[in-house]
Each structure stands twice: as C-alpha cells, then as structure tokens.
Length: 332
Image (cartoon, rainbow, N blue to C red):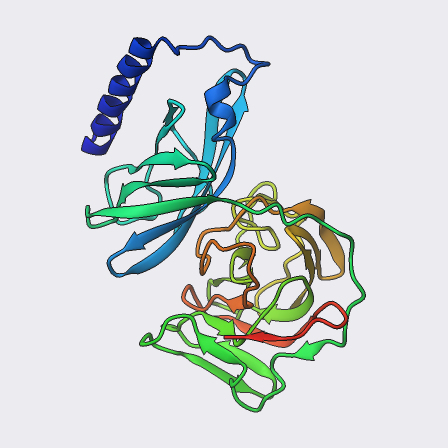
C-alpha cells in the first residue's frame, strides 16, 4: 500500500470517528441518496496550482447502487474511475491510479466543500503538495442550432498569423504550404488567435503513410476529437472520431494513411454532432466535461481551436469555422 493511500485511509478513519461521535451516521438504500452526498454530486471543474504553472482536471461524482462513485480526467491519459472515494458532508477525499503521470503513487485529493466550491490539496508528479480548487461545471444547455454565419478559412493567410503555439519556448515544427498545414516533430500544439463559443467546423486531415500518428482537434481547447488510425475490436472512446475518453464513434470511418479524411463538427453548448467522411458517427450527444490535455477547465468561457502536434506527424487543410449569425470574434 503506497503512502498516499495510507494517508487517505487514516483521514477517512478519523472522519468516521468524528461522524460517530456526532451521531450523524446514516443508513442508505440504493434508491435513496443520503443528505450529505446530495451536496457533492455532479461535475466539477478543477484547477491545480502547480509551482511551474496551473493545469486543469475534472471529476464527476454520482450515487449508484447505494454507493458514491466517480470518474476523473487528469492532465494526461484518458478518463478513469475513481477507486477510493469518501465524503463526510464537508471533507472530500478521493484517489485515482496513475496512468501516464510520472509517478508511482496514486493521485490523492483532499478538499473542503464550501457551497459550490471545493478547496484543498493534492500532490504533483514531484511529490510536492500543491493547492487545487474545484468549481461546479456549468450546464451549457443545448438550445438548438442557430443560423450560421459565413465560414472563415483559418488557413487563408499565407503564413500562420491566425495561430499561436500553445506553449512558448517549445520547438514549433509547423509549416503552411499550398494550403496544407503540416508538422515535423518535435512540434508544439497550435491554437487559434480567435476564441469560439458555439460553432460549426469543417476540416480535413491526413496521416502520412509509413508513420504511426496520433493527433487530435480540441474544440474550445477543451474537448478532444481523436485522430488516430489505431483499431480495436469495436469503436471505443479513444477511437478516431470519438470524444477522447468519453464518447465512442458509432462506426469506423478512418481512411488508410496517406488519404485525406474530413470532419464536420457542430458544437452547441456541450452538445456535439460529428460527421466523419460523410457518415454521422456522433449525433447530438452531450460531452460530460473537459478531456485530458485541455488548456483549462473554464467551460463557460469561449476557447480556441487547438490542433495537437506533440504526438506525431499530421497534416491539415481546409479548416473552416462558422459562428452563429451576428456573433463577433473574440481574440487572445
């Protein structure tokens, strides 16, 4: 048993003794939610304040089959199940196993609930204790598709003046030639200078022949639509065309390496429709929360289009985006 798990168990034992002393122990059935848990259920957007820069996380807590359960999305990897979870009406403690994090201990979060905010501590990959803050995620309801304005070509400039590197000081690696945007790793992720709320997007991508490739398109910089030619027995949330870690595409549609693929995507609120090479593979489904690799967890705000370039070689062309009629542009 690792040190973080021992710390969490010790904390929970203390909370249980305090609850018994107060006489507030409750017996729950699968169909009833104990009063303390009603305050904590739902989706939470997290910001971790690391000394080397803040990064986003996300978690969702649910009451299922008479127990408190949850899932978590971190800064890397995919959405995973919370395997240790306790809440006493004020203090929340949970841990998740590492995935691609550079650590051997579980990720442990201990925080105090105050209204719609949880403040507490976690540890980074260096073992340093750092602060986190979780806020309730916005609803972002689907209001129906608006009238779309004229599409804007994000590759219309002869250079990359419409784009910025996600992180300064990293190898850039991107070039634009004859309308084709391509990278040579090592390269950084690209984000648009403009930010978007609801939009309709068309883009085309190609994975070069003879090379494995892994990329993605992040909508508002927070929801990744996967790009990969990896195939499993059945489509899953990590498959090409899926919302990474959350929503599986309805069928395989990716073409062989060297051939151009098309995405036509509509995002309204957190409701998404994806047409992949002419086939609808996601139809008005709700995105639960931010995917791993998101730029931040502030879902209520507009965000940029992000093209993932730090995983492998990829090419894009004909990137066109439409805003709702009359909506103005927002820039970095």
